[in-house]
Structures are given as C-alpha cells and as structure tokens.
Image (cartoon, rainbow over all chains, first blue to last red; front, side, top):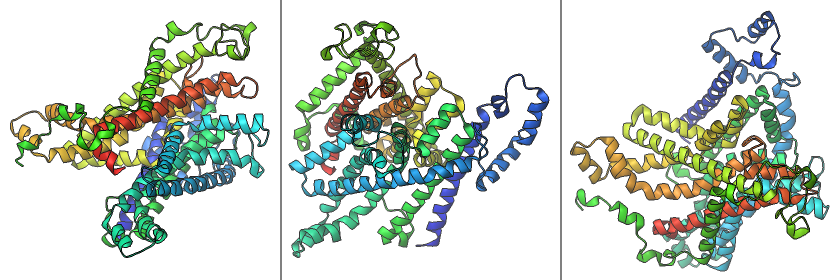
Length: 312
Length: 301
C-alpha cells in the first residue's frame, strides 16, 4: 500500500475528528452557560464567578477551544452533572454491553444478508429472488422499535419465554440482537444481490463457465471476491445506522448500553455525558471507516497499487 | 452528435411512459395500486383529521380509561378503545398521523432544497466552496444522524421548529453529493455551454435547464429519503425526544403505548401498524416510480 494513499486517509480521518470535536464545542458553548444551568437562581454572583474561573469559562474562546481539545485528547470528558462521576468512567462501564450486543447483531446481519443476497442473485427473477427481495422491503419498512415491541408482546407477554428487559443471561440478548440484526440484514442482502448481479454478467464469468468450472467454484472463487468491494462499502456505511439503531433498541429492551445511556442523558440534559458519548461514537465511526478504506487495498490490490479509489 | 443536439427533451423524458425496455413497468401492479390507495387514505386522514376524529385528541374521560377496542367488547363509541387517560385511540391516531406526515413533508423539503442548493454551489464554484461542502458531506456521512439529532436536542432543548429543522437536515448530504455529480456532468454537455455563451445568468441556467434534466434522479432520491425521514421522526418521538405531549405523533403514540403493552396493547399497536404500512407503501410505490422513470435502473438491479 503506497504511502501517499495512507497519508491522505489519515489526514481525512483527523480532519473529520477535529470537525466532530469542534461541532460539539460550538454547540456546547452556544447552548448556554453551564454554570447558570447547574446552579440555582439565588446563588450569589461570587460563587458563579468562582465556578466560571474553576472551569476556565472566563478565558477567551480560542483558549477555551484549545483547552477543550487537549482535554478530549487526554480522555477527559468532564464530570456528569447528575452524580459528579467522571464521564469517561460512566461510559467505560457501559461499553462491554453495547459491544456484545453490536457484534452479535452485526453477525446476524451478515449471516442473513450476504447468503440471502447471493441466493437471490443466483436465482434472479425466480420465486426465491422475489421472496428474498420481499423480505428486504419488509425489513426496511418495519421500524426496529415496533419490531421490538411485537417481539416483547409475543415472546415475553404471551409465551413467557424470554425476559422483556435487562441484562445478565444469554436470554436477555436474544431479542435485542435479533431486532437490531434483522433491521439491516435487508439492506445488506439488497446490495449483495446488486453487486453479485453486476459481477455475474461479466465476461470472465462466462469464461469460467465455458472452461467447465463448477457452480460453487464460480461463485466462491470468481464472483464473490469481485463483488466484495461494493458490499464492504455498504456495510461500512450502514455501521453508522447500526449504532443509531442501537440507541433505539437498547431503550426498547431496557438494555444498559451506550445507546440507552445517551438517550437518558439527553432526556435529563446531562450535557457532559452527551458530548462524551457523541465524541466516542464519532471516533468509533471514523476508525471503522479507516479500517474499511484499508480493507479496500487488501480486497482489491489495484487500489493499493495506484493509490486511487476505483469507482466501486 | 453536435453539441446542441445533446439537449435532452426534459419534459418528455420526465412524463414518458412507453419505453420498449420497460414493458413490465408501464402500469402499476395490483400491489402498487393497493399501496397508492393506502397512501391516499393516509393523506386524506391527515388532512381531515379534525373532521374524521370522533373525539378531540386531548379529550379525557377518566371513567372510560383503558377500554378495549369495540370489536373486543369495549364501548361502541371508541372503535379502537381508549388509553390510560380515557382518550380515544382512533382520534389520537388521526392527529398523530397529521403531525408525522407534516413533519416528514417539511423535513423532506428542507433536506432536498438544502442539499440541492449546496450541490449546485459546489459544482458551480468548485475550488474552496466545493471543498467545504464535500468536507461537510463527509462529516455528516461519517457520524450517525440519529446521534447528531439527539445531541442537538440535548443541547438546545426541544421545540417544534427546531425538531423540524433537525429532521430536515437528515439526508441533505445525499442530495448534495448527487446533485454535485449530476451538475458537473451536465455542465460538460453542449447545451449548458451553449446557453451560457448566450449570456444567460447561471442561476437561470440551473433553474430552467439543468434542474429539469436532473429532476428524475431527484424524484428517485425523494422516494428513498421519505420513508427514512418518517422512521427518523417516529424513532425520536418514540424515545420521547421528538414531538412533545400534549401534541402527538405516530412514534410518540407507540412510545406511550409501550408502557401499557402488557395490559392494553391497543394503545400503541395501531400507530406501529400505520407507520409500518405507510413506509412499506412508499417504498413499494417508490420502486415502481423508479422503474417507470429510469428503465436502465431496473435492468441493473
């Protein structure tokens, strides 16, 4: 992989991160004086002043900005307005739960989406294709919070098989993971199908068939590797939606992860926690996009050689 | 082909129904007809909510709390039953529909116009304007929008106007990217250059000549964007961070019903069903419009 290619990618990532931090800083300052919000109305001006000095709010804005950036870089997101604990610690204790749920849901998405798309593409126009495509549209239209409620209604209320909320056993993971996982399986299946169809129409696929290669070898050795780039792109773009979806799904199932933490913090206007979570998510997204960009070079050596993105 | 011949007859292309390659897509299928019918019903119910609803949507009747729907043995005047405050679920559904459709329409409009204008600006001026727009596009695409929306709501508190603006910002980057690319390619064509040499103002070229030529693609993007906007609005309202009581929206209705899911499922479920059927219908109708507008898409997909 060529140097300039990597360098440009890194520069872009840093720029996006800086934008995210700046966005949070600007919005934070625009939204009003945090001291005023925190303290009661009858607090003497002297106390307010001392708080402002303590938090550096009396300094000029550029200085505050630089200070904010240096704090963020050091992992210091301030303290929660509600219980005075450091935001970093509050977030850290929620990460494992979200990571577990996210990975499980992502696995479900891939396990349903990619084989579904391949099968649909191989049987283009037949019944299987229509059924798969029908399900993708259904999945796209069914809001995940509604699916979650339907699952709770059936599996928790009617059958009494699975717990409706909480965390602890594997049973608690089943419904949230299915709700989150299936919501994007449809999109992945759709794009996998499109990418596969594109590849299946290429002359080299005809050649492979003409030289007597079996169906399995044609799909696995020739079609799938070439369809990989657009599929990976879409999965990468959709990861953000998965993160957004996680906030809703975690709330529906009362699952104590980053998403429900964010929703609660927003409802209580605990700004320190909100900005911490937003920055964490922005950082995760940028990192994921970087990994995907690097994966292009591995999936398609032409990109790494030329250092240019071919239009996928 | 000479430069002037390249001017595609925009209007004819836009309304043309007969394309030899798209025989199957000329007339809507039965499924699409049903979807169109449902959408017409939804729009009708949203417009005439005040006239259709048998009760006011905030009208409480504490003697009639949590009554099941009429077809499950509830009182006959409450077709879909009542909620925890004795309000008529059906009446609230009509008004929720009105709010959700209104927010989605406004949001779609704001996003489409913002994105289109920025896309045209980027393609027209190139240079640093282009750079700034594209960095913003990258930024918006890299951070999940629901998170940004939640953050803005947390920082600024909630109001209807702010909420509509937030919903409107969703998806602008897709329009911007799309329009920028289209304008760049259209500007390279002979007719745009020819009109430019006649001394026509650029704004007029874009409005009168370029926009009609890319309208088809924009309409396709609208049909893709609209269901997602509805889902965004309902998600935020469901979380209790969008439309605020005493107002109501489909998402909020489902969110309120969630607390009664074990005992009175009829409070939330109808709203969920309406969201589902509406987004499903728009998606299916959108597919049909897409095929009708651009048969080459139907072939490649």
